[in-house]
Image: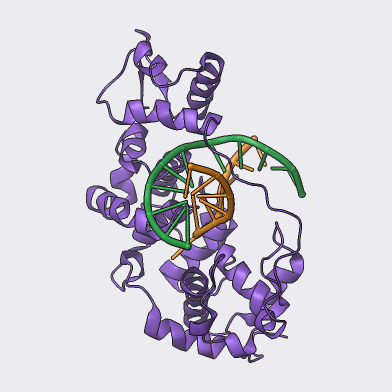
Length: 293
DNA sequence: GACTCGTGGGA
DNA sequence: TTCCCAAGAGT
C-alpha cells in the first residue's frame, strides 16, 4: 500500500475531526510555530486540560523563543508550575536558546533541525513540522498507535515500543497531500484522545467503528505482557517534586533546612537533591543556600 | 530495550 | 481508596 491507496479510515476520520475538533490555542490559524512547539513540550505525558493555562501564561510572557532565551532558565522552571517532569522546562529553555542562536530566532521547519533541539524527539519533531508548517510527516504518538492497533491490527493496545510494521502502516495511511496529511495526523490523535481512549473507549461515537478490526473481533481484552504499574508515593520522583516545589514557591534562595523539612527520609532526600543538582534543576550558591538556576 | 523522570484527575 | 494513566525524551 502506498500514499495513493485509499483507506476506509481516512475520510471518515477527517470528516469527524472537522466536526469534533477541540478549539485549542495552538491549533488556531494565528498560532505561531513557537506556540506549537511550546504546546508539544508541555503535552509530553501531560493532559491537555492542565497544559492550557500554563501554555497561555508562557506565550503571554515569552511570545518568542528569544524572549524566553533572554531569561534565566530557573524562571522557566518556576513558570512550569506543577505540570510535572520539570526537566522539560529546562530543555524548552535550552531549545529556545538554540533557536535564537542557531536559527535566527525562528523555529525550524525541517524535521532534522527540529530533532536536533534539546528535548525534541521523533514525535515532537514530526508534530511541529506537521502542525506548525503543514509538512507531510508520520506523526506517531500514543493516540495514533492505539487507534491503529485497534482499527487495523484488531488488538486493544499497541506493543510497548514502536515496531517497523507500525511505522510502515502509518506511512502508508498518510495522505499524499501535505496539508491533508497534517490534518489527518492531528485528526487521528484527536480521535484517540476523545473517542478511542485507553480505557472505556466510546465506540458508539466512533466514525470508523464499522471498519474497526478490534470491534469486528468482538473487542477482545488485551492479552499482551503486563504493563508496569507506575508507582509514585514514596519514590525519588515524589521526593524531587517536593524539594523543587519549595524552590518554586520561594523567591530567591532557600536555606538547607527548608529543604530538609520537605522530606523525612534522609538518604532519599540526599539522593534526590543530588540528582536535581546533576540535572541542573537546582543550583547551590556559595553561601550554601539553594535556588532555581 | 529497560528505566527514570511529576502531577493530579477520573472511575 | 486505589488504580490507571496523559500529544515522550534521554540515558
